[in-house]
Image (cartoon, rainbow, N blue to C red; front, side):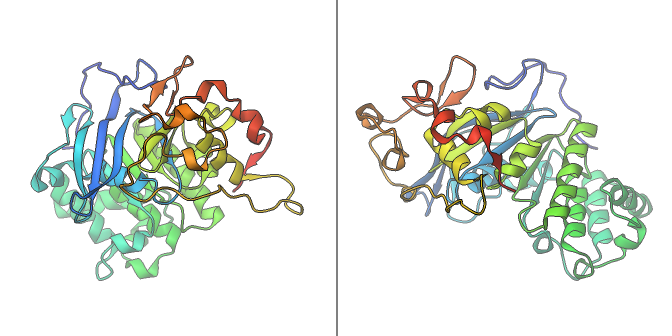
Length: 355
């Protein structure tokens, strides 16, 4: 049967999460190694996602977003491993679960939606049969009830003529329809948490808006916690309550979405916003962040963004920079964060995030 949330009133200690909202996901001190343990790709990552909360995870390609999500799902690729830290889903520790234990958790307590949904569906089976099998295996439904429930779920995610859709193979459906099918599979067993990793990247603007609206509705109706990973700040701004900013395998900022977007504390966050905003399209030159991220596993003396930052000071290179809580309850990994007026530096607050 679907998992029932614990009545334990324990809540997240992460700044930005309402005190009366139980944590659906807790990540504490996560480290991930690649190349069979030779290189550290993710380090000191801590955050929570509350019940009914949408948290966005943003950053450049290679910032560690997908490795963080795959760690939460127990789906790290060969050669990668969680090297330190703890991951918990409500009242259950996920770190160190066996493959069989992960098979029990995935689909029932945590669901996932990825980019390119067709690659996660069997091309030789109808989409209805694939969802029915999930219901039979995970919830123990008989064949008739599973088929009936499949049609109900397809209708719930906004697929027109759901009974007919259930009889179709993946190649007979559009990208937007396939993404809705995958969302139906992900929420079929009423999970506590949904991880959406670049779930709208390959969709056109209209379909993307429909899928985002669907995710928002599912979250509201089922008190579903959502961890949304995207390089698209417009998507994050539309959906998320709180934003985590990742750079070079670390979280560098965490705070309410509106505050992060309009008053960033970390120079990297300001740079991301600056290159993603729109002024006068006829006169605007392409904005870029100078330099390049450090190589995976690079050992640096201080801030990992220092060589690309316009505000670097000697103290930035003195040693590792911790993710610290600020006076207003946000978190930032910058020794100068609160003394810099980055909202004026980039003037992005008066701009619109590009769609």
